[in-house]
Amino acid sequence: MNRPALLSAVVLVLLFLALPILLIIAVSFSSATYLTFPPPALGLRWYRAYFDSSGWLDATWLSLAVGTAVVVLATTLGTLAALGLGRLPRAARTAAAALILSPMIVPGIVVAIGVYYAYARYRLIGTPLGLVLAHTCLAVPFVVTSVAASLSNFDRRLEQAARSLGATPWGAFRQVTLPLIRSGVLVGALFAFITSFDELIVALFLSGSGAITLPRRMWDDLRFAIDPTIAAVSTLTIALTALLLGGAHVLRIRAGRTPRV
Amino acid sequence: MSYTGQGTATALIGAPATRPSRHAGAILLVGPLVLYMAVFYAAPVLAMLARSVLDPHLTLQNLVRLAGDEVFFHVFGNTLLTAVIVTLGTLLLGYPVALALSRMRGMAATVTLVVVLLPFWTSVLVRSYAWMVLLGRHGLINEALRGAALIDAPLRMLNTAFAVYVAMIHILLPYMILPIASVLRQVDPALPRAAASLGASPWGVFEQVVLPLSMPGVIAGTLLVFVLSLGFYITPALVGGPRDMMLSQLIAQQVDLLNWPYAACLSATLLAATLLLLLLCQSLPGVRGALRQSMR
View 1: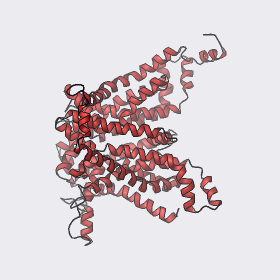
View 2: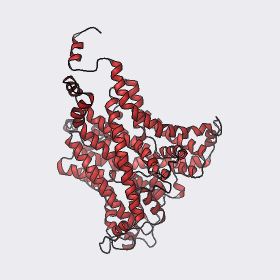
View 3: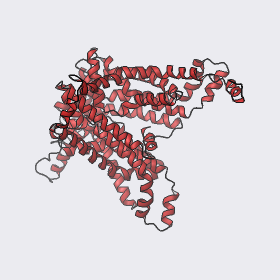
View 4: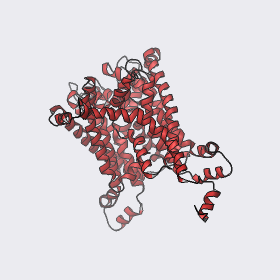
């Protein structure tokens, strides 16, 4: 392979990947009333527009609240399941793992209309509870895979040793197992939050008119006008996600696991 | 149970003595999540899918009607075509990056990895919005071309199939790059060197040594991108036109029209296509490992 040719191809593709996102960030700091590039002058007017709008802020708070509830539910259920999965008989383990991991594979729209169909009967449409219940299912696979990965480096005999030295099952878990898998649990929790915070397809069906999440609010706005407020909101969510995922990445490397590649 | 040496060891390290009790513990740990997902996710989805054959009573009529439905064939065909184009696009653009990424060390590798992961860390909605800003009638590309006097009237790019392809390739590229790079990274660097020292040209080394060894990653990435493409909803809805409708959009539209049996049939088709592809490709050697690696 020709090295300069390969290198320039790689640089072009990397630009293709990065530029659209950098552009959104640049546009969000524009002082113009309309989308133009380069911005005539820099300013924070679109951030002000965001912080002055109760609609945007309500949506943001709802998304943060739903995401937090999802973290609690998904991390608890997912960590427990990851601890038990390895000890199940083979057939049961395969079946349970297939169910638990399937939201990663089943197309979003199929999940969305499925839960819409069922939750409507229990009047969960337009309630934060409905969103939490559904988002937890989407977030759980990330917790289970992350905790299971940290468990695969974990020598189970440590826990057994603690038990033989007189620790209760809960004591052995809290003092031996948990500290060793903590980074896996934290990474799973971060992914659970982001999964819920960024989720749109399920929210489109479950939000109704009473529980408008941030992505849903952005979607509604995009259908009418692409006003730069959305660029400001996008930049804020990019910053939050990058911060959390950057944190997850550092945790992973610290935990001695190979990073994504 | 006889008191064998192994038994003594087990007793010493305090492992739970009998198998059934060990399973009971595991079931107590996994049970809550399985129950939760059965109630709030699996049962709702299955109940919805069941309407494809139970509405108005047990019948295959809805599915038979699907086979003769022109709209369905148009949309299904368009979905497959989009998935093929997006998969080829990501493969073409992603392979060189994966190759470079697997050879880089230090700072350059970190920067490249961050750029590859950057879109990964941005929601699909925000990335689709970025392409709306870029490709719109008064979007940045049109303004730039007009500014450079290359065109008189703005090009129509937004709300076309082209916009869907470009935005989806942008969104799905990391899913192609990461599995290929993870496989290439495990290739023994002595192999290409040996081939070169035996007289292979640089292209020969690539074609006969590196490329074949990277195939599990290529298949894993191709599968991942193709399967994810089939289910895309947000991006085609925002940047595509009415003629570029994909299966997910048709499903959502039918639900809005309260045409549940039809929506259920479409969902069953989409799900079946997805699962079939995954099962098919999981049976290929090396692919399962590459997929698992890149899912982390």
